[in-house]
Image (cartoon, rainbow over all chains, first blue to last red; front, side, top):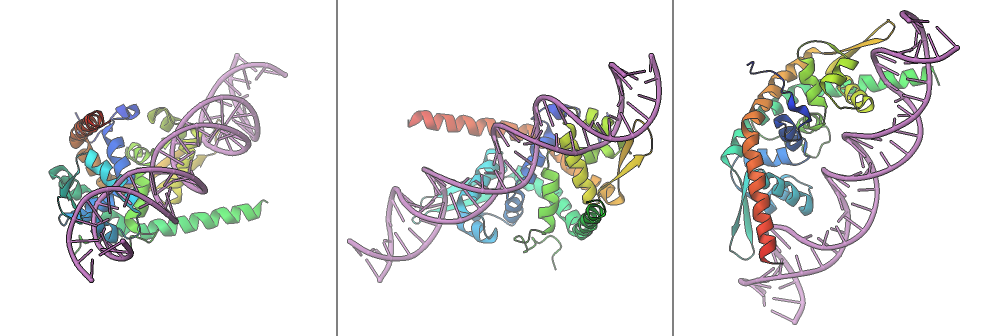
Length: 131
Length: 131
DNA sequence: GAACCTAGTTACCTTAGGGATACTGATATC
DNA sequence: GATATCAGTATCCCTAAGGTAACTAGGTTC
């Protein structure tokens, strides 16, 4: 069986690609994973690094990642509370493909943005030509 | 400069990762790219392969990929019409990281699904314990 | 001239994702 | 007793993504 073939169970909501690509597409999830790549980070630090995400949305993101077994949540019995988030082994294993994708992004996004501009301009001109 | 560092321009809507991760997260886009990995495919064929996507949504997806310079659209002057979609060089270069991610997905998604079940069960029990 | 083909549109609807804002609870410090 | 810290909740809102269903255009075949 060819290892690169495209799986046929695309309809299946549990289709591997579907499940993972959804997580990746999540606005903050992949960012959080990459931030956690350097070691455990507490909630408030995460908020600062991810800059303007609201606590509700950050919590949603973290819960989803925890549910998927990609990160762990550790509550320290302190006051004020301290909660650390950390990648699991599986979470860490995701870093590599994620980093590859990020590198691809960094080297190609300028071209993508140019393509968008060119496309949009062509569209505008077409509209002006036949109003 | 460390090649694996996390870029700071996360706020920037044009942040490379943001742009690419969004495309990947698109429900059909990454699937279409992988289908086109074997060569040009016409609209109707694409519909069959991607199985239940409606023409409107498929068109949206294809237009977005075309706009980003990842695929080309070729109209053949025939009747009935024939339109072929094909990866550009940039589109092809995306296949590699995408395939890596798919392989990661295929080997880890079963674990993810188990983790979800376990998490959800734990949640249910917690709710039953303190109603 | 009726029906069929492909590659789309058009109009409409529903839901989920994300966001803004304000509040809670437990404790320690002033 | 007022205030601060931290890690969240609760409530409400808005938009965009995705989906359904029906229709169009241009030409060909029966």
